[in-house]
Length: 358
Ligand code: SF4
Image (cartoon, rainbow, N blue to C red; front, top):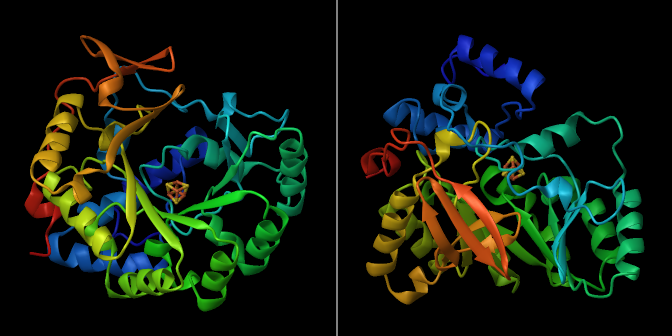
C-alpha cells in the first residue's frame, strides 16, 4: 500500500481491483524515484509530471475514447517462435527479446501494460537460460537477424550475472538494451555493469521522459557511462500531463545533447485501453512538432516523432488519408488506421506545472 499522501485510499483500491481484473500493472515506485516524487508533491501537490509517470490519476480510469485496444502494436501476433511470447519480430534484421518482466518502477503509460502484466502473472515463466537457448535455436535458422533488442520489463533488473551470461551467449549479434533504470535506480549502473556493457559493445537506449528525471546523480551516472565510451541513445513517449509542451521537449533534448545522448525517437502514445489520459490529439501533436522544429537548431529537431504500429514505425509523412478521426498511414505498401482522440479529451497541460522548478 502506498500512503494516502501519494494517492487517496479509494482511488488506490479501485485501481488495485483493475490490476486484478483487467491486467493493469500494480503501482510500483523505486525509492530513488519516490524521493523526487515527494519533492514534486511538496512543491505543487499531486498530479505533476513525475507523479503522473508512476501514480494513477482518476482520469486514467474515467476517460475512455471510442477506439482503443489492449495491444495496439499487436506484439502477440509477431512471435516468430511457436509458443514463445518473449521473442517479438517485426523487422527482418532485428528482434525484441523480453529478457525479463521485472521493472524498477511501473510506468503508468506503459504501452506494454497488458502483455507485461500477463507475463508477471504467468506461472509458466522460463529461466533466462531457457529463453536464450530457445532464442539461439531460432537465430541459427534465421541468418537475417543482426540485432537483438533486450527489452522488458527492464533488462537491467536481471542483475550482473544474468546480464553477463546473456551477453556472452549472444555475443555474435549486435545488442541494444532499452532501459529506464537510469531514472528509477541509477546506481544499477555500477562500474562492474558499465564495464560489462562496454566489453560487449552494447548500445544503451535510455527512456527518459522529462528533464527533471535527470537530477545530479543521474547526470553523474550518464557522464560515467559515457566516459567508458558506451554508445548512448534515447527514446521516449510524448505524454499528456508529463511532457506535452515544446518547452519541455526542447529542455530535455538539449540536456541529452549536453550529456552526449543521441535521442532517436519521440513516440506518439498508442491508442491503448486506459491510455486516453496520456494521449494527445493529432492536431496538437503536429503543433508541438512544428514548435520544436521551428524553434531549435537541427541537432535538437532531428529527433523523429514516430508512431509504432502493426506495420512498423510510421511518421507524419506516411499519412495518406485523413477522414474524420481516422488517419491512414502507409509504409512499404501496407496501410494502418489510427483513430484520433474523441473531442474534448485533450486538454493541454500548463507549462508552469510541467516545468514547476522555475
Ligand atoms: S520500465 Fe518500460 S516496460 Fe517497465 S513499466 Fe515502464 S515502460 Fe513499461
